[in-house]
Length: 417
Ligand code: MG
Image (tube, rainbow, N blue to C red; front, side, top):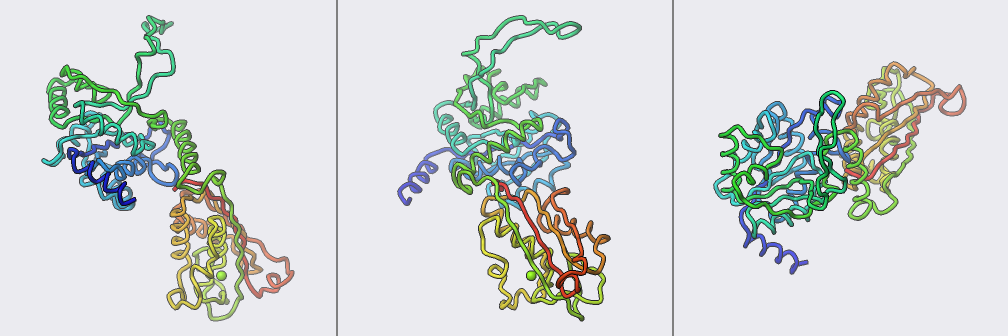
């Protein structure tokens, strides 16, 4: 371990100062939603976070400039950089109208020390440290490098797109065709010159290398990966989700065959006078409340135990012992958030939660929508992931006699944070 890490450090020492410019444009129109594309959820975290984490972990990259839409600046700073502790992101800058304008703004934000620039699309979340490092190795020998994969489809050139067309005008020679991805890595002076020249002339290309090619500089192709796809449509997101799941099953994650897990939880507390009745994080008017060390929220407790069970962890009694004065009167919503954090740290995300409360009285139906939204908020889940139902005991047993309130919960977890 010691030898391996010192080897990495030595390589970094001898290498140029590399900054990544990660562009996160895109409105998400083609995704059919209102959430901007880079901020859509993939495996429980924004698409953009996956992209940035690869650069965060790449030993050769010293810093990252994140370029996003002006209206997304606060979102990028708070929900991406701060929330996920992305220490290499030194600047978050506003982009321009086209991708090329955004990259140009990123280049203008580079510090003096930067010698090499890796430009990456934030919408390619499955880029790996290996791909980044491969491109960085190569830029030591060639001033311009693009990550690419050989084209597998036969590509036809067409003409006459109007009316009855298009018609095939010719067939390109497939073995010479490569589909370019990002990162595209360049010596800084070269990419700056290429961008200045293109911007001055109002030339717009569909990737960065095109601008360098215009200067007559040869661009080196290095192998990327089919998995390094660009999220453009809902189909891409579904594919990326599946690839991510397979990756986590393959190592580092929960292990093969453990992509999905379910958990079950049960809790019961006695009804007593002089206590506030809290269910699902909501205070329900009642002449009696549930006895307990914390707020005795049986709904939250059943959900927590279900989550812990699904993650293969010990129950809440072990996690938050009632002998610990810290948990006296504790807000179960806070504890629930902690349990979800623990589940995430184990490599899982919450897919859905279903809970049934058994109470003879009070009548709970009017409070259920609020319980659902409190639980969703505590677990950081979007709408439609949590269900709460209530039923009575039909006068039978301790529930029927109004001696207590109980709750059952089941949850499903999927691999992928
Ligand atoms: Mg309890």
